[in-house]
Structure formats: C-alpha cells, structure tokens
Length: 138
Image 1 (cartoon, rainbow, N blue to C red):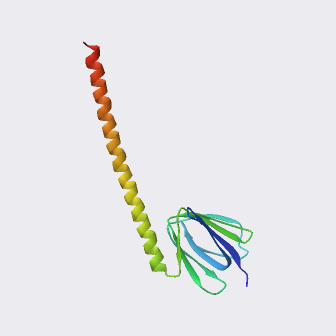
Image 2: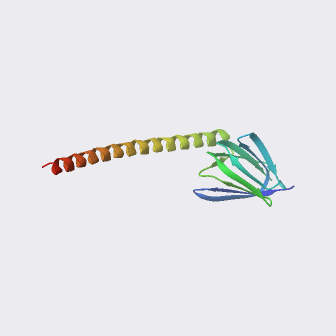
Image 3: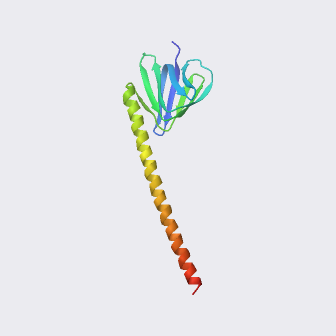
C-alpha cells in the first residue's frame, strides 16, 4: 500500500503521521484529494473540514480556519494558525466554531479598547491645544 507522510504545523507545534493513504481537503474551487505520488502542489486551504485516512483504515478529521498545503516528495505539510484533529467530525467542527467565536470576541474587545484610547487621546490633545492657545494670548 502506497503511503505518504503528513505533517501538521500550528502555533502549538508539530504533529506527524507517517502512513497516510489519502487526504481530502477544500480550496476556493472545491474539494480535492491527494494520494502517494501526487505532483508537487501548493494549495491555499479554506475554512472548514478536511480528512485523511491512515494505513489502519481510520479516517481522521481536521478542521482549520485556513491554511497552506504543500505536497512534495511524498510529504504533505499543512501550516495553519490553529487546527483541531479527531475522529468525531461534529465535535471538532464545534471546537473550531467555538475558537473562531472566541477570537472574534477578542478582536471586538480590542477594537472597542482602541477606540476608547483614541477618543481619550483626541480629548487630551484638544485640551493641550486649548491650553497652549490661551497661554499665547495672555
């Protein structure tokens, strides 16, 4: 049975699978599959679910917000900010959705805080300008 190596990279580290038979993923034009001996490829993965089957006939599900797939010399490398991996696709899809909601909430909070800081700076600069203007006329 022809196999290839899969390496997953995210902000937590690296995870390797040495006996992958098939990988199925999605990019902007739709789904695609990769097997051992596939041509050299670089693909931008879209948000969602991918899967791969190992030599023991087990499908592993992978969710990610997006990523870059690189296949060369029978090694498939997927680089992403964060991924979730498991055999229960509903569970890992929910984990990805929860993580994206958490990140959206953090981004929103950061934007609100930056808006408040900007408002405070504008008020402070206005007061300084008024103080300087009144000091010049005296």
